[in-house]
Image 1 (cartoon, rainbow, N blue to C red):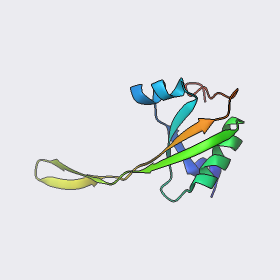
Image 2: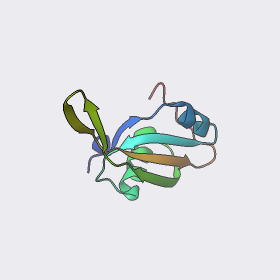
Image 3: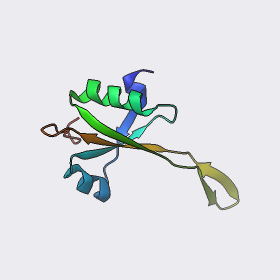
Image 4: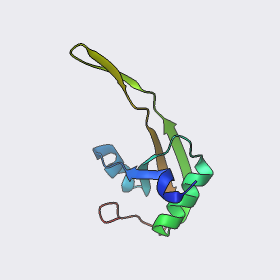
Amino acid sequence: MDKYIVIKRPIVTEKSTKLAEENKYTFEVDKRANKIQIKEAIEALFDVKVKKVNVMNGKPKAKRVGQYQGFKPAVSKAVITLEEGYKIDIYTA
């Protein structure tokens, strides 16, 4: 799987910004990607060393607007822990 398909976008929230202080970064990833593919993609894209990868698979959420019903798509998130001395600047990457 291509590294540009594995990593979709960084997730910038208050919680993820606080995690970045602990050298942990959050990304939205492809549902089909495993931890090894995510690690290789992050290392190739940002030129860093990854220590650990945690993946959270979200379920689709039911939504309704008036008489129309549907689902918000399922989202997979990965929390990447980097080795000491490495850093990712999400705002310029």
